[in-house]
Image 1 (cartoon, rainbow, N blue to C red):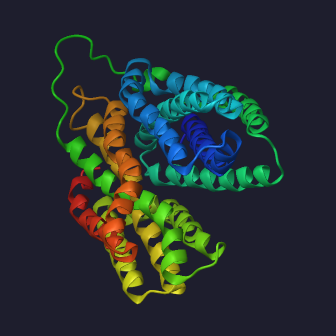
Image 2: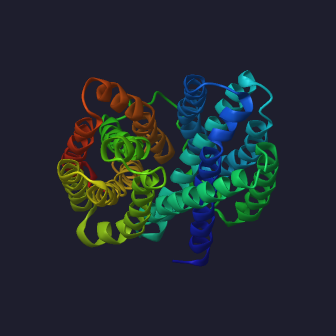
Length: 385
């Protein structure tokens, strides 16, 4: 790998950490938003939907702009606006202001997400090495560190606006520091302005669908693991947080080893094995019951799911730049797969909650195991990547 690619790999790595760090620090302060604005759980839940609205409205323009102008400038300006969004969210002027600021926050996060994944595809292809899973592993590391720091800042009574200003300065410095390290914008610019464009191939919807299965499972594991531990098995408040911590740790381990495993055995084998590990681990843990079994099952669930979305993004980028070159840009392919996949983070947790109101939560979570097993069928679509 030459110097330019090493520099670009470092820049992409830092950007993935920034994206995850922003998410982690934000999530850690959600209870403070509720307390400061004195809103109910229902109102808070409705407010958080504005993040998702921002995310979904950003995906298509982020993909098109990354194709038109190149991913490098889109990453830079998204990071600049992310620094502004951190301040907007921290102000907490009113409930309506929170809705507005959360929409902006979700929009710029998704714009940065699509463009950094598009640049990651280029770095991966130019270097001839699988790197996507490691990049997503760095996102998970950023989320974990951000969550811990956000929790500490909350404990130390640092206000959200003070945190927002500090993050804004940090992100501004990093945006200008890493800008020269990226590959030039021309390397992934795609001009589709002349003549009618062909319809986007259906394969990208398929890749997104299997990413959706993984995202539903990830969202449900994060939101319902603690509830299951506390309500079904009588865990203490601290112990009830452990399933999610174990799950996140397994995601990091899986993503840091995913590229090596995909190179050694092939992406299709890794995805199929991940689905089997996740589905079998969760099913066994739910039937055995008890806190130790839940810990093990959540670890296996995280390990199995960890590689799916990174490998789906990698497959989308590879197919767009090879088999479907001239029809769809890699950035647009990533945006399309993201749009379908990330919908799972929105629908997953409430879907599980609705079904759990009809039957016991413990058995409702078998739906997640079933979705994990369906990932075995996704493996055939990753063979070409």
